[in-house]
Length: 321
Image (cartoon, rainbow, N blue to C red):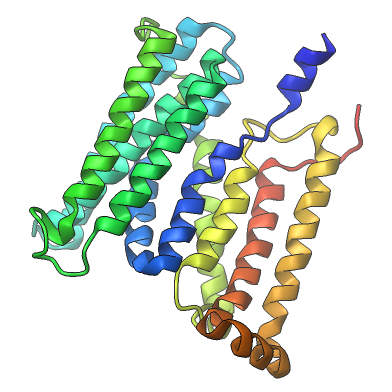
């Protein structure tokens, strides 16, 4: 009995941080703009899909029946196509009706990664954590390779910016996750249910809050944030935020340790951010890490922001029960 409770209370999934970690690495290796495009092309279709891929984790926590789980997955998969189509329409409107192939390709990449996310959550729901972990490692590797294979020049590949590599990697990730998901969980036989729609408000809030806080930080701390040369600070905060994910706010069994961890992250972030206002510290860092010293204060801001968002979305106040 104690073992089951401990397993249920263990909310941390290290694989949640794999894609943010990939974005950090490829950004540091010169593909920052592509990593940003991939992230945004995943985020906006997901929001138009009512954050249903993220919302599955919330829905599953309230659905003990695998038939109900399967029904939620079926609806979530349909919503990924609807979300991508809606974002494509917005992109056409924004460009005054002009179809831009590269934009459509990035949207397709985002949709495929969101489909993979649906099956990633489904595999955890089946209880086969090992398969879910393998799927996410495969996706992370394919995403990293695809981003690194993109080209800064539009005409360097069969598709604009050699996006065939990234698109192919995302398609393969979605296909592998679907095959493994079906192999483990069987056919999605459950009747479609609306649980993912009912949990959409918290799922949307969880998806949007960190990017919104980033925009606020860009507005309030222009000198610090605009000094950064890459998207590494944003993705460093995203790594903390995604690693904090839970289907509900933590109760007394986990809130204390989680709150302490977020406080430590916030204090580290404030310390790093303060370097921007200490010329001697800036000079010291520049002498040792060169241009990467520009990333340090902005990274501090986003770590503190991520800790605040994580506590707001997933933290709790109270001792153990």
